[in-house]
Amino acid sequence: MKLLYRSMALLLAFFITASTLAANENPVRVSSLLQNSTRVVLSCKNVVASMAWWTRLGFTPTADGMKRPDSAITLTDNQILLTLVKDSQPSPVLMFGVSNIRTVKDSLDSLRVPLKYDVEGPTLGEIRLQSPAGIFLAIRPSAQEPIIPVTGDSNSVCGRLTEFSVSTPSLQQELTFWDKLSFTPVRSSMQPYPFSLVSDGHFTIGIHESRDIPSVALTFFAADMADRIERLKKQGITFSEELKSDAGITEHAFLTSPDGQFVLLFTGNQ
Image 1 (cartoon, rainbow, N blue to C red):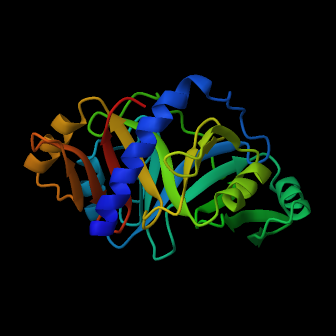
Image 2 (image 1 turned 120 degrees about the horizontal axis):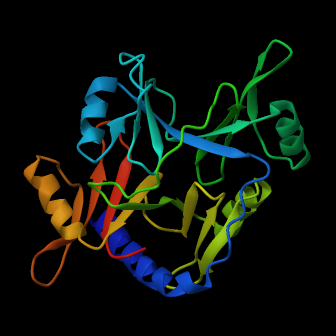
């Protein structure tokens, strides 16, 4: 736990530094290779129990998200879509829909990106790949992976989703992978440690070199996060780690879902 505590403190230092760099952000281009980022898939043992946890964090089922409540449920917080699936596969998985999956595979092959794929008749059903830091991605034909619009409003409980945070031993190696997929660097710095944010215009990946982030984490920010954390405590949510102010108020906190998904809550404006 002490490692997580130190990691959160360093991440907080990063976000303070990053906020001063925001004015110099690079414009984000829409990914030309993976085309449409659609949703995030999370594996869980019990879909209904997992849904109950996420709804307490401000996620609600979509209109069509309850068609198979025993095996899959799709939720949204107005910023992203989360699909909970009864599965034991590694997660989270970032999902993408493309108009011509064969062309995308050929492009990935030419870029020498390691991948796996499923064949469905004359075409491909799904392409799977993994970043060097361990972020899983899956690509499907657009007909199987439609875009479900989100409003972009902040999560009513957790605030603004700023990034999917991941730790890596080599920032450059991870950046090379995402550059091949046409993700654009948004911010980069060597202080307080080497980091970079890359985005396709929807998914933003926060790459943090040599940090103690156990797995991919959903990172949220809100100016009134201390109040939000207190409300979550009153609802019975258990926090893995907390960072308190000098006055003893919890301003930043770390959560883990019943199925192991990490969530970081920070006070501030990002």
